[in-house]
Image: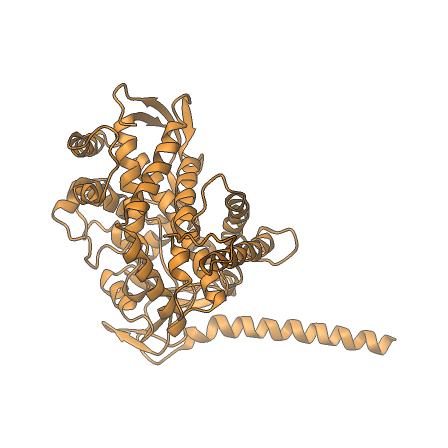
Length: 482
């Protein structure tokens, strides 16, 4: 018995020593790399490195203390140890553009493994190579077919009006919640053909909220933790979506009580795509819900917040939409031609993306040793192109610390200095749809309501949120278009 006990003690001690050695080697061996001019920097603590400092909350329209300190000390490109890996952090627009344009050649998407556990192995957000290419091509086809369809535009406007009409007798609303309600209802209608009142919609929403909480939680798969609940919620959403797919497939084949009426949503088109497996189609639906829900609603919240503190921009925006409405009958729906006239609206959206920074950075990994402008990025190292630092760089954007939509009258929104949706082959395929949603909602908001906000700031954790949900005190205008 004693000998057995000694054996297990030895195993535990040996395992602990082995783990310690692996941690030390993982942390310190990259520091001894002599193959070239690795950027300057520091690795911080063993195992954790500088991750906590990098993730320290700060205003989303600032770079935060970590980047400010490291850039001032080491330059716009520096090394660190983040998310358990040696990492090159880039706040340089040229290098960021180079990384994004060389996806699949020199660099590869490389999010932390726990993210894969929630999103799934074939999610477009984490997939690489041919799998990502097939999913992205399907997404681009769907967006191209959808974005100017009258049904899509009418759905957006109808849901926006329903949300705004519910404000009529409310002295205040929590706008982040209202924006999420709007974007979720739009994306569920467009992807799955479901209305807000249907049982499947409520079921998906409940699981989806659990899913979202786990996506930004500590990745511990222990029963009862947000992460574990999120993995389970994804499984339930997948089962619900599979059931909807089977029901739709039966209807298409004329087996649903003789009802073969054809729908015009994403799912109808997706069922005809032969290049995707069943699991990939389910994952595609989940990716669409994720992309069309959180980031779009956050963009709306930032716009409302920034406009409330920039009266001149709000008045200019309101005048543009009054001009559009003056050329239509009172209750005529908006169409694609109206959207193309919303030039200042596009400037406002671009400025909110630059100034608010919904996405702070992306994760990449070097597939081989990469030399760029005298720097060496060793093979296997993580690379973090930081968009925030470029968007808020005063040498690249005049008065960068101010919300100034007029800058986009002369600045090119497709330049290397502006990457709110990523870039290269991983640029967000749904960005155009998000802009249409936001523009149509803004049209009715500025024409029908006045509002004031509390002092609530968008904070990067690094995910961005308003601490109090952005409370609006709303007042209907006397002259309305609703």
